[in-house]
Length: 228
Image (cartoon, rainbow, N blue to C red):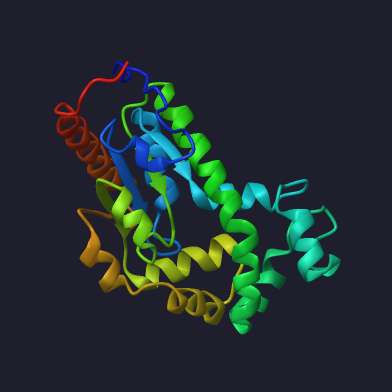
């Protein structure tokens, strides 16, 4: 599939300037629902992927942009021996202390936004078919809902989510349930969806759903103006 013509940045510091240039897709789902699997499949089909969770991990990795600020605000005991954020320790703190969560978000959110904008414009300039923003807490953000053209929710039963996260992240069941309870409810998430992708563990079925969605977006994009 041939890529779209490159999009010339009108204002490369603002995602809103991309609206109408190419389809902007939001991809979300509860923890363990399979967002990464879906975004990987879409990337293979030609979509540009901006994964805000991946960006969050990058800025809190060793030498990441957020590390020095986190160390200054929270102390060196929140940085692990490799120089990365001690995610387990920070997770425990922010669940117990909303003020600490606010401080962490004041550090990380501007850095995530800056990198998100940069990646999105680079993908548009490269001529990708459409851009998928993978945002775990997309429903909670009015700004994201106003930006995107189409919202995809990856969904599965809660028990499958819990099992996946326990295996993947070596967390206890109560820890996973606590994370789920801190997120928007499954019902509310589904109520906002334009497309729901069911991920109950059958990869072939999920892949077929993703291919159908991809074609749907390509068909809908044919009416967009051509940029050069």
